[in-house]
Image 1: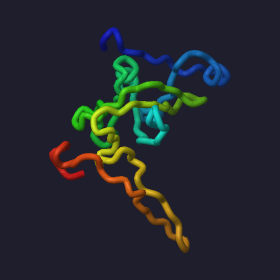
Image 2: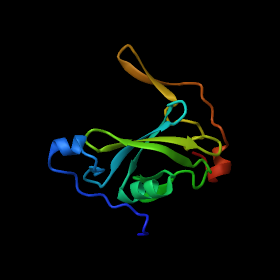
Image 3: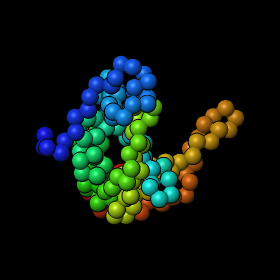
Length: 154
């Protein structure tokens, strides 16, 4: 760990201290993760939801660039490292019990966040009809060719 790495203390036992105190002590789940909700700093568009372990959270705080933990790859992931669509953290907040962080970011590059090439991972609307749920695209199109950027489809 470099000198810029952050270490996170155990959450306080007192609920009042956790909810009202000034100590940032994220409550990582049994897998060592906190949920990260990511929105655009300018227009508040919901871009993505991901997870962070202590290392990802520390690197995000020390570099100002969003880092996440990939549950599927079981590895640290610097957002935009392959695509160029880095997320610059403008503000980070935590919820009342410190088990979720909210990142307000500015995205560089194509301004896409989703690996499908779209700006947001939330490009489908859940609709219900006669007791069945279905998905409908919101009309957003990919901002780049994913096979060119990632060297593969999807």
